[in-house]
Length: 299
Length: 207
Ligand code: SF4
Ligand code: SF4
Ligand code: SF4
Ligand code: SF4
Image (cartoon, rainbow over all chains, first blue to last red):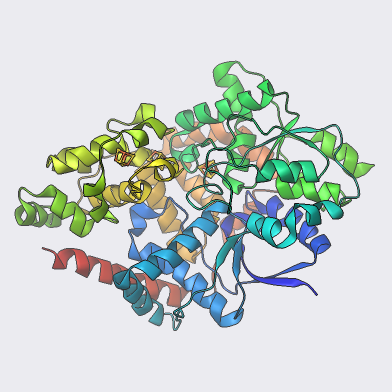
């Protein structure tokens, strides 16, 4: 029987948005693993980590509280799962803040009443998609479904910040988490467990407002991948994926570098290893083509 | 200077720490800082901060109200949570930085023309329109944030990116005409309005 979760897709996964290829490739992978996601009906944006200027504290918490309330109402008894690091973080942080602060909880409850919604005392657990894969399926379980091992590809696993901090994956360290490397290995590719920039920050939303400063960070992330002989970079985070992939031309122009390295999601990698075609794996969503993965997908 | 700011100055006079504890998100943690400097050394944007978190916390205790609240420093925070993960006292530094930034803005003394302040504000407005973020609209407003001429320059500089994203089907121009939104917009707006009222009442109740 399929495992079921209440799913919070988030803005960046919407059709036509920057991270929509995460969603597409993920669907292909979850299909193989017999995982069923029930979208939270009428979910709203969580305001990520950047809504604070306009949002303040309680209005921001109310946004995520609404998603939690809708999840409880329509998908009762199901854990909430998000694939966007920022979505996961905002939702989980809200749950914890409301649990720890009476004032915030009663404020959120009062605000929710205006939308005819409520949250229960014990709100559902809020998990990241990679947590579900690692804890509920396991590395062995992920490996079992591989039909096309990704032999001969060397991959730098870029975890980034918010998938890793402040919550992270149970049992992993903040400074050098190993799960993404293990996922890479499970797919038959070669990982780089000592990749120095594994948990470095790419600048997040400041890529928009402070492009030079953010691109200096991205430059370091890419450089270290090349130094380790990586063919490509893989990440779980939609913001990381975008920041590291799409500014390479601008970085080359600024620094005289010759970067041209594909950056894909872990789910794209898995979809290819599970025998899905290039489209199902969302390889057509790459701005920098992932040639080696395409070759395997088209084989 | 805003009215609220004057009221707060009068109320807390010499006790900025107390003001922060009462009005800033997670502000009651500030006194727990032991000035070890780990956060300052862990921050990816460190080189660009006038005052890293450690210094900000010291300045709060020293009552440097204007200097803190009108600093560009907090607006450099990328929310990477490195400081939180490493702080030996477990201060929720990221949230305090966001809280200070927001409080300075609420009082009308945040730095003018700070790009992240503008972006953060635009993001919120974009979200408030439809309940979801429309990346293309957000992008377009942003290019024109500095006025028309600079807007065109920005758009040109980013056009290579826009084109690549468009080819990869990750920017949908149809979005501009409507795009994504929640169904219960009125419920969402009423909820946020209520939350804002509660928050305002809490802060002005502290007057
Ligand atoms: S984190 Fe980003 S994508 Fe996810 S819902 Fe919030 S704003 Fe939208
Ligand atoms: S690496 Fe960048 S995008 Fe990814 S989580 Fe950190 S700040 Fe966010
Ligand atoms: S790491 Fe924590 S205790 Fe040390 S200076 Fe920063 S906030 Fe203070
Ligand atoms: S969360 Fe903000 S303050 Fe803390 S290390 Fe990251 S950028 Fe610096």
